[in-house]
Image 1 (tube, helix red, strand yellow):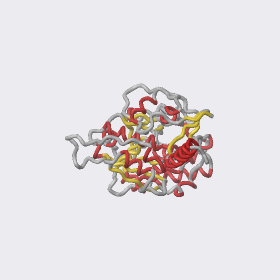
Image 2: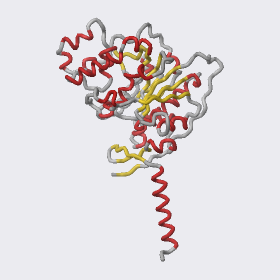
Image 3: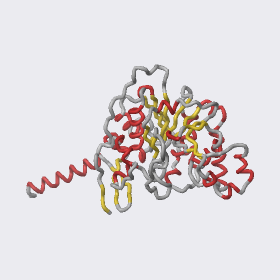
Image 4: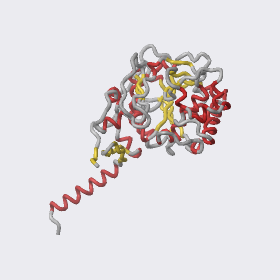
Length: 353
């Protein structure tokens, strides 16, 4: 007969196994450490509930702002922080409608959308299934694997996905926090343009395309008659009606098809947007995309803030603030993201390798 102490140990081990199975985790290696992150099946339990945000007295009934984002297990923590920052800094949070595109087969059931609803029970939230097969054969390999995921191209298909009552939408990446009233960005005067975004004409635009592109007159001739400048597609305001009427989804896809035949760029879904829109967008104040805080696309080294006022912080690049904070190797800018983190555990589980 086993001793009472042995029985207690067996029961304890059994409970640990059972409880551990109900809170499945996945691993993300950073250097020599493994940071265990929640799987989508347990994500509802991993995040705190946000406060209820209510409209101020001057918010009208017809002032809806439509925000579009993608919803992905790897970026769920960033999405939660982005949503919280938007609601916290707008005077009319109940007037903000969120539209999420996800490759999750159970788009509007459990998992990722359930986690959002649990943390933001008062949120005007709509979730749409984005079929990865629609774009998978159009993707060509880029400098970073994350940029090759089908969901990274979902922004190309926003106008085809959103309901007809959405006539203007503000698209935001999941690695941003907004520290100003998002209505200011969403209501920018498009002046007849299809897309508005912060524009950076000091950047070396030629670096976004290969020598094969610049040496081919029939290809680089697309920029004749316009002054093309870089803009980041992680923060855009889009006239959905004009996008549909102009067939811009097809135009972007045509450049993706050229890329499959001959390599004319290196960087995921950004270059085909530049090929179609660069030099033809409505420029927005740079304060609305303090981008590059995630460092470069290869090593993700720390970067400081650009000079000037800030309305939106964007961790574009390889380094993401939640991973660097969990690894206890944060950049100084990551502490600006931390107050919006709804992740339930104050310190992650770290395994030494």
